[in-house]
Image (cartoon, rainbow, N blue to C red; front, top):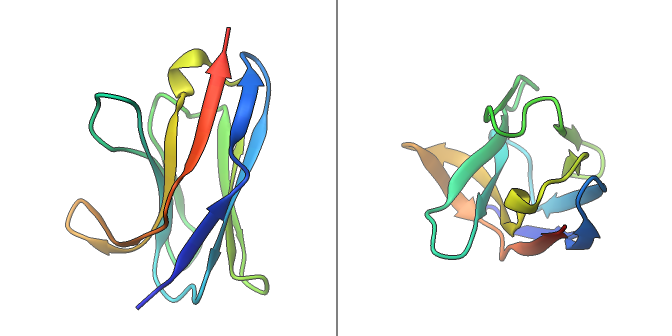
Amino acid sequence: QVQLVESGGGSVQAGGSLKLSCVASNMLCGMGWYRQAPGKERERVADMTSEGTTSYDESVKGRFTISKDNAKKTLYLQMNRLKTEDTAVYYCGACRSGSAYKYWGQGTQVTVSS
């Protein structure tokens, strides 16, 4: 069982930056970030294996950076050059289960205005 609590969402203008945080009860599994926009399915944003290997969706590559601090049991998502299409609820996930994650946080809203 992994408990996840996200924070750091908010409203920002296009071109701005936000940094999301996800505090985990443990970081024994791979973790990542997904997002869900209104009327759309949840989609992958970025992943990090327990060893630290990262991968990104093409839509965010070069703008977003996933990182973690094992001592703080915290996963981060630095989001730069935000676009209006990045508007969504962002979810932190842990422990791969098929194409998604077994455990999820409650989500944090990110709104990017033009």
